[in-house]
Length: 176
Image (tube, rainbow, N blue to C red):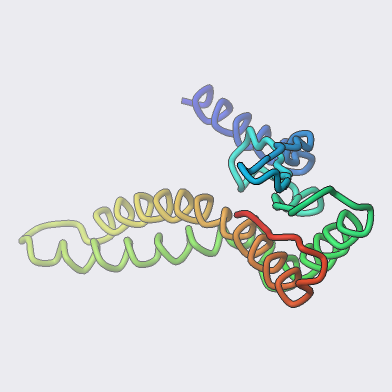
């Protein structure tokens, strides 16, 4: 039994270590030439890990620039990314807090719901059923909390889109 617990702990620790340093991949420029000769470029970052494993300090915007890319446009994107990292860190909770609070909420609901529901059966041990419901709820809540961590990237991208939309002269569009 302890070997299974150690394997689970090792996986959890690996996820924590990876999430502390992982970021999107290298920048890739994708050239676009329309039939009339107009040019644009999509700037993309290959993301090989789920959102919840990415370090917020390394998030990067994917964006579209019409015409040739200028240093001024790249500087505008860098400034939007800087400000949005601060914004995302301010509005989104710590990853561990977000996951544990979801697990605790679901676990409490599972304990109460299953424990109370078991009283409908004569001779049922409400505490045993409640404990089962609590563990199942906690596990489901942890999984849900991990999935919801992806909304940090969504918040970051929305912030970047809003910043660059209020400065249309830079001709930069954010792609989610």
